[in-house]
Length: 473
Ligand SMILES: *Cc1c(COP(=O)(O)O)cnc(C)c1O
Image 1 (cartoon, protein in one colour):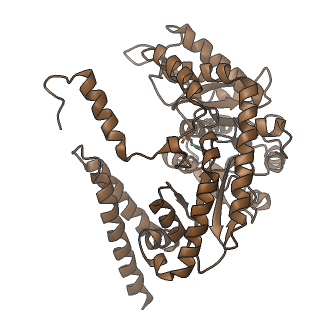
Image 2: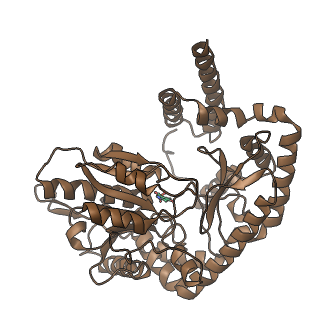
Image 3: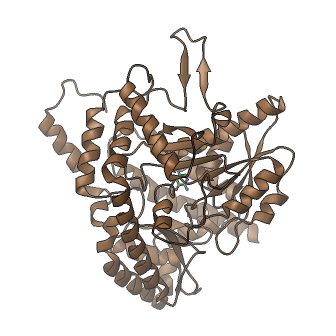
């Protein structure tokens, strides 16, 4: 495709945009349990207005747009106070949780190199197996050795195992509040004790929890402290574009003091284009994302966040009760807050086959591995679907139980295979080929990626099965 010779009319384009959406996930109907965080129509209007008002402004140069500097500073202050920081707490806004995590990891690498006077040693950071994939990305990007620590049966990191993994090259520990796969909160105060004992940094990944756990705690739920109240915590990431309900492209990374954050900041005085100083990974920073984050915190206020947390809690409670009332299913670990996963405890019920049937019924299902499970992130729109979801789920479980062949159909065997095959290198190279293929497309046919996916899915199974059988003999 090429840029049209002559631009189309606004009407025509808006029509095309609308049309392109027709196969998208129907999040407005509460049929998807990830990716979209929607508070209310009224709130969306505010976010859009604020975003549009600053759509052209650039947060790259805080001197030029003092409005954006003010919004960013106040967003950081409000977030710091929510997470019990003090006058020394500092931070900045980033494009999202991944950038916040990448920055924290880079900061600890550079801080350690500076403190130890060793430019080229490979620092080690200990992360729970349940930590977000952004930590692995940080390891790849910044040449940090990410050392994995297992989680216990409750889905929380095993602190003894963390301690055993500490070496002279360890520079930081990581805990999640909560982690994405299970929604469980790692024992942050125990990690803090280790961090203090061994003089290590401790990052708390509250990307998904930062703007929901504090409200649940205020409502009296038994949420263990995970923030700057815990002495050893040196940094926290918290996403505004998740339970903060701001527009996409907004997260906060906080540090206990500038002494730590200074290792994050980038300064170059030799670029012909001028002296450059940036806090994060990006150059240009969208004014809209910064302004709408500020507008969101100011517009919702503590009261609406609290009310929302209360109703999410009720939705989660009903869903969990409904799920555990199905004898074949159980909740994974001991999740707290609005995200959790459930799995099958009956070998005759393949959870991926259940997922396939749920998708036939029009739900967008997030499948997980380790263990094979289905993931939920609950938002206000899900209040209206609880009964329908649970009814469909009960039916799906019965159908899978009565028709064992379903576990060998549709996506169930692909996921089962991909999750269980021990040859991870081979799985990775197949998935790499797939992603290359998706980005190779030079056509605008939106279904092509999908076709390639299923076609490749099949190729993957065939190859893996072939390999597997050959090597079994
Ligand atoms: C979402 C998430 C991230 C990454 O955030 P993005 O905004 O998707 O880049 C990191 N950690 C946790 C626990 C998350 O849930």
